[in-house]
Image (cartoon, rainbow, N blue to C red; front, side, top):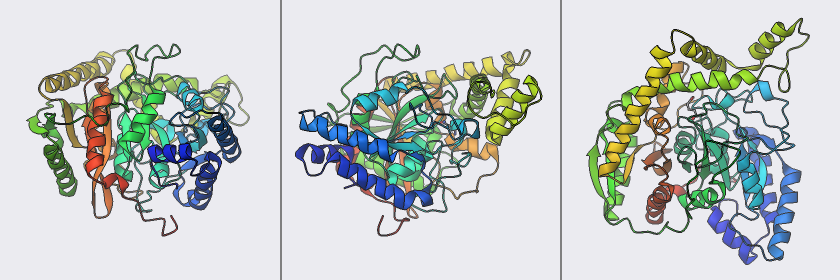
Length: 486
Ligand code: GLN
């Protein structure tokens, strides 16, 4: 039963085929068997999960029947969870038990979802391979020598290997879409502001957005129905009506205009990835869509602009981790300055320190105009590129990543790692929604395709992704690296 989609599980729970307690126990058993290999979870909450499952079964017996009632979920360890360890993948928070829940957590709890645990991630969500985690790398269930992508690598691996039915993630520059692509699952980054950031540990506040990692676009729609909406606790959350994302999944794609950005099919793209994406585009033509080449002329500036904006905001956000109120504190400080210095030196990993240094430099007097302001201007150019494109097309489609999952330890140069997000980062800079869906395999590894829509067009994106999944079965392919009993 654990391999089923959320939509299927929901129907099975409703018909009494099995209970949420049985389902939850099945996931816990599977986690017990495979988490030591995958390292997808930092914390497993077996007891509280079973208690939530019992409550869900009782609520169902009393007549409740909402879609996520009793469905087991894993949450990225960036979301604050009351009474549960919340590390953000960092030694800095290795002992931090949150006193409150993030809004996203509250919403899933209210919907009756069962929290199995907290998933591994790159430290403070900085990375593309899950290798910067203080808790060690996550392994890709398709090939244990490879990374699952990052920073939401634990969530992606957990969904792909059926260690949960669905998972949350966050995406600042690609951290949902790229791990979804590498792990052969569906990953949605909503428009900036669609989902509350309250209680989500901040990396780069103008880019961070919570989203979904799931086995199908339909499941993402069911999750977004729960997550989306205005939150008075987050002043950047959008005061826009929330659609019923599941209601329009079956709309026809007849007449859909797809834009193919030339810049996403240029040098650096692996031929196998290109082949799978072009085949998927052919599938859309069969469903009535038309393809049109478009330009995103400033895309080549996106990674550089991001690596000014994101570290600048990170350096400000991470100043709160100083060893005073919570988190890691160095041993035997001699004075306040020594405590700040050593707590931060010992508590943060190398990549986080690198970002703090870059960000502090970019924001310092004299450099602000040269770097931060200029990066913000590039951001506007990138947004304008997309706005121009959306006058001619309904959706922009290309590869999610230039290649499939790479080997653990293969990328030691930080800049090479930064280039991982060459197709995804511009979407965050522009605040747009994007989804990655599996569209094939290359040498046995999943290939992801990215669909980008106009602001708040999540319903349309999910409709387009779902229609592909109704006519193909790439999203049903399962990783084999855990062996037969997986
Ligand atoms: N890989 C990018 C980075 O390291 C994006 C990470 C993210 O989306 N959280 O910053």
